[in-house]
Structures are given as C-alpha cells and as structure tokens.
Length: 297
Ligand code: AMP
Image (cartoon, rainbow, N blue to C red; front, side):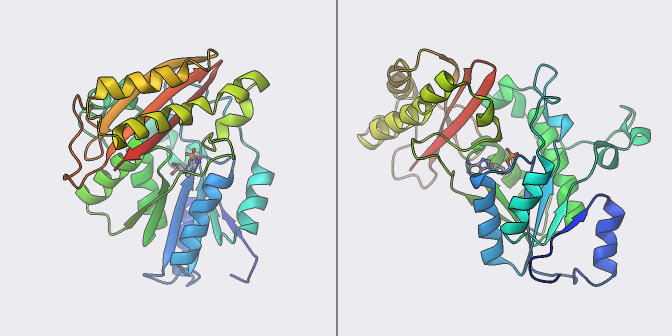
C-alpha cells in the first residue's frame, strides 16, 4: 500500500483477496501484532518491533469472547475504534484485520457439537493465571491459532506483559508446527512503573495512585532473588511486604513459575540453569484487574 495508507479488513475472504490480488505476496515478510484494541504504548512498541523486522505489518483488533470468563467484563471492554485506527495508522501499520465475532465464530459452526478448539493440556491447573481463569488459555490458544491461519505472517509479536500467554503461545507455535517466528517484546510501563494496559483507564484516582505498588512488589522479589533467595514462599513474602503500602489493592495471587510451562515452583532453579523464572502478581483495584510480571534471570 501507499505510504501512510492503512487498509482495514473485516472478513477472512477480504484477507484472502489481499493475497490473491498480489497485495500481499506469498512469503511476504509480514509481522502480525494481535490485540484486543484500546491501543496504548505497549501495543505500539510491538508494532515498532514488527516494522523494524518486516516489510509489512498487520495488526488485529478482536475482543475475543472465548478468552473471557463468565464473570469477566467482556461487554465493558473498551472499544475506541477511531482512536485505535488513528494510532495504528500513525505507527505505520499496513493492514488492520478487525473481524466481528460472527466472522470469527460463525453461529452455524459455533454450536458445541464438533466445535474445534485448541487445548493446552493442564493450563487450568498448572499455572496461577489459568487456575484463576478456567478456559482462558483455551480461548487464547484457539484465537491465536485462527489468526495465524488467516493472516499467515512470517513473525508474530506478543508482549512479556502477559507472561503466561507468552509461554502458552510459544508452545502453540512449536507444537502445532506453525511456520512463524515468535517475538516477545518487553513490557512498556508508565513513568511510575505501572505496566501499560487497556484496563488502566478504568482505575479511579486513588486506585491509580496505588497501582505502581504491583511493579514495586515485583522489583522487591527481583532484588531478593538477585541476593540469592530461591524459596518461592520467601520471595512472595517480600512482595506481600511491598504491597502493604497499597491497602486498596486486593491480592489475587503471587506466583513464581517455570518459564518452560508456567508450572508453580517451590524452589527456583539456581543461576546455572539457563531458564529464567517468571514472577507474577495479579491484584484487583476495585473492579479492575491488574496483572504484571518480571523475569528472574
Ligand atoms: P491485549 O490487547 O491486552 O490483548 O494485548 C495485545 C498484545 O499487547 C499482547 O501480546 C500483550 O501482551 C501486549 N501488551 C499489552 N500490554 C503491554 C505492555 N504494557 N507492554 C508490552 N506489551 C503489551
């Protein structure tokens, strides 16, 4: 497309036409940035990475119902379409794929009979995030599989912000043999440490003021880990101490997990092991759920 022009596609057949019309050459160097919209600087850093590595960049905007639990805020999820399109255009995105729910899950095929989905075995029991959100990773794996099949990118960009999601998508791509390079990009934060999130706009001023305590607690764990602490319970204690400064935040979990499969650890590996561990915290600030993590290298 011409410089500055961003094409919006709403259906799978429109995307296929891009390919058959030659606008998207076979094996084009195309980077995919999947999002649920409400675009912020975290998403834009994925776009910037994709633009650096590829000739063409596609972003998807799809608020995926199958990854939301019954009690979660699917209907209330922010959808500022005009702003999103403006931000993605300014960032140099070539194609925005923004399908409807019916397009992704056609009603005729959406009945439970024979409905296919991608299951990541034990995701709902092995990791803290899965245990709190049964079915979430099945929804994520299924929609990511569909988006990879539709868009057929050479590389796909995800954020470290959703640490378990990054682990899950890696398994999906490796074990289902997607010919896609996975890039996990660093978490983008506000100046005070709060991880950027589409949900942050819902924080009330007092909640927003306490929200940086999540990252402070993660940093407390990272410091204790750097000082040699390897017991998960002791590391979590450091995080709980830090969170006492933020009485409005209701702790959901502190997790210390393997980056191999998200499995909860009692004792973290020592530094000779090449794999980092994942330290995550989830809290509620009022109705708003905050999730963040750091890697312990
Ligand atoms: P979402 O729209 O929340 O589903 O996020 C879309 C992608 O952006 C996911 O791969 C997220 O991990 C990533 N992402 C969200 N927030 C951030 C952030 N603060 N820094 C980096 N990546 C992020």
